[in-house]
Amino acid sequence: MTLLANTYRTLSGTKEIIEIPNKKSTQWVIYQDGKPKFYTDFYDLDIESNAMMNSLVLCSKRDIRDVLELLNKRNNINLSIPVITRLGYKKKIKSIKKEINLEPLPEKWLAYSL
Image (cartoon, rainbow, N blue to C red; front, side, top):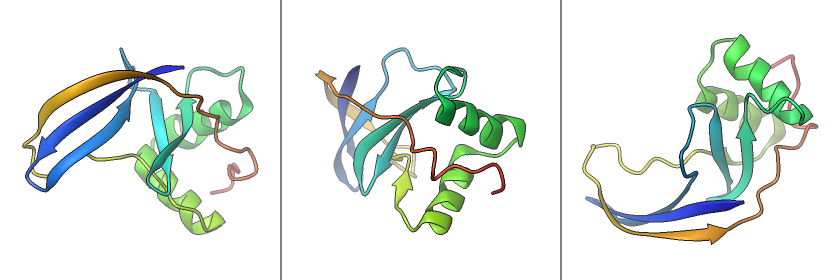
């Protein structure tokens, strides 16, 4: 999968964030322990974990960050979606295309009874 490694300058320093080109609101790169590890698209229902995330986020009308927080507590993991800056000041320094193989979220972490 071809993704963009964008480097931003913020008030707290420079940050490199992996982003999806032409991103839709249902596509997310999910980080584990500060590194990009998983990819989810809520409308790609061919993959079971995407269908489960669709149910957890869209059907229950929760924010994806809230769902990841519940998964973290339940499974003792560290999943997150990176935030470039909380203050709103950011300047893109460079953008590089990278070929990264991201997996779907493991189904054992996802359960309909969150």
